[in-house]
Image 1 (spheres, rainbow over the protein chains, first blue to last red):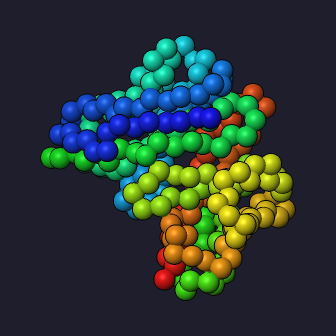
Image 2: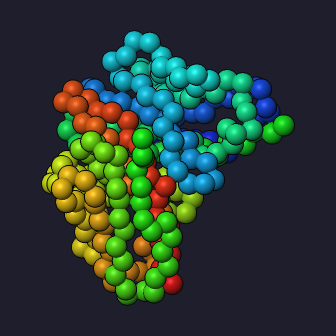
Length: 115
Length: 116
């Protein structure tokens, strides 16, 4: 079974600062993918970034980067230069890279960016 | 291009009634997923379709829940004899499927179901 743990129910950051959202995972699969999604108050789930378990480089997408530490089973999201529009719920998720590819989600972290 | 669409966006129903929720995936996406998000919670997997078949129904919470997909496109999630604990946001997602790994799932805006 797969499990995602997000231990930070809420995080606060000032505009233009960087913030790290924690995610640890547990799986017996050898090949898997890790995802981060953003959910604004409007409710839609927005895909942010993907990291494959065999990728040697940490994934980056604009201001988002994923700090992947495979031995520690962690996949923290780093948002650089926070913007007011980054205020939202952030979900870490994972799925195996073979077979049924359902996502298993963590409970989320609510990020609030202040001016 | 058009994203995943869901209808209705909001549904209020009385306990005991049946409801149908619709999902229209991104054109060309062969994989379709239904998830449920209860208030303040993460997403809970319900069912997955590959084409018109559902190889994984493990997440359906009870036999009151069923889903079908026709023509490899539109999917309908049906909840019979709704209960108050069925109140949640029901999210649909679609993706391409690749043999050696998957692609990211794109989510629709969800249907907020309230059972009174």
